[in-house]
Image (cartoon, rainbow, N blue to C red; front, side, top):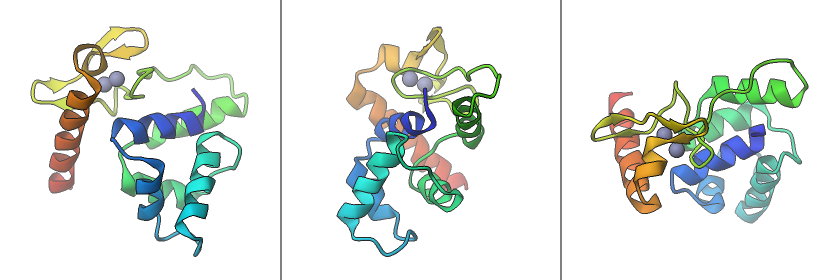
Length: 139
Ligand SMILES: [Zn+2]
Ligand SMILES: [Zn+2]
């Protein structure tokens, strides 16, 4: 998975559209929202490099693992490191699991987590969002 694809999977797993995130990126240079949305699409397609400020702003919009992003970026730069284990649907990882009522998700396959395997996308979304809300309260 590329760094841009990782961000896209995590954004989608949180039920956010590109425009939701573009609207949240108010700290970015004063671009019109539709321009910001196009620019985000290009980041997610690995066409445009992401700045550190962008990563920080995105991290405030939805949860992803900065370590994983750094590992994927290193791999994209041909570093000889093991690719991180990610769910192919939601891109969750050991350090950033889906948290539901019954605890964290687990692996049901090399690249598939139990939350994605057992739940319909809409149910999974409700679970992830309620976990994210809890996390926000705790933060
Ligand atoms: Zn998953
Ligand atoms: Zn998961």
